[in-house]
Length: 109
Image (cartoon, rainbow, N blue to C red; front, side, top):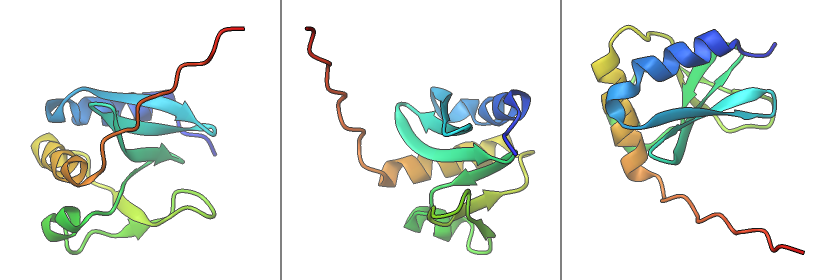
């Protein structure tokens, strides 16, 4: 089941205080980015965030989920009400993730 754009927009709105948040359609679902870093995704109208040590310290009892078959486990974020907590999670997670690689320009023929 594909995620609804309305749910994706809601998630992005809840995370807005973390920085520049945007979603990109990927494989029929959506990757979620903060300041250009891919940190989470929306899959089957579920919000999942990459697991990091800082995230584990912040949410030691957070359930994990698998976004799709063959993917790594991620935090399954079920409560989207506390926007400031969610922004804190995003900032902590992104601080531990590597900088995105520069995109290569396609050569013109």
